[in-house]
Amino acid sequence: MFSVLLVSMLAVEPNFSSSLEHPFLSRQTLSLAKTTVDWDAWKADQSRMAWWLEHGWQILDGTKAGTPLLAGADANLIETNGFNPLDLNVRPSAEQHQYWSVSGDRTLHLISLTRCEVLYQRHLVNQAASKLDHRR
Image 1 (spheres, rainbow, N blue to C red):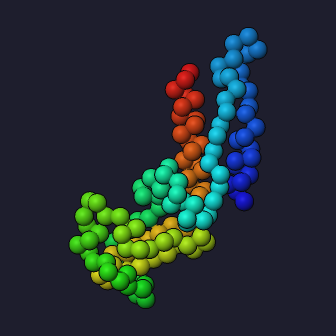
Image 2 (image 1 turned 90 degrees about the vertical axis):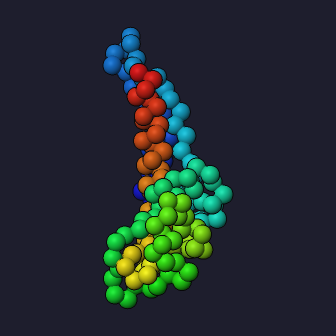
Image 3 (image 1 turned 135 degrees about the horizontal axis):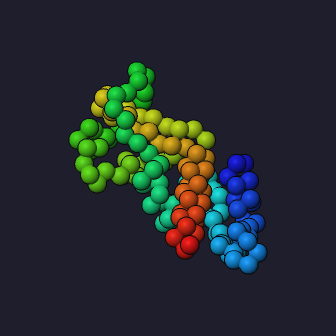
């Protein structure tokens, strides 16, 4: 709901000016991606997947007792620079963060798609704001 409200607010295209004679920011069109919490839609969107591969998961030191063991993953696999959680056939849940133990001493954490969507939309807003700042 928050991301939809944010997108609605940003779609208004405000016109800012420091004075009526000298506007410092003209009307800009801010185009944001449609919001989605569907994993197949995320996988089909190159921009979202590039963001997700960088921000949608984490490897944490340690693991809590009772955390399910991730089959097919070992500590050596996640230490490599080219590690990609998609190689393990895991997929994020729409609503729940997910955690798996890797060799009993590390944890793979996938952020929920709902949270990823909020963070991705924030990323787009920050990118647009940065472009506007550079135009001044």
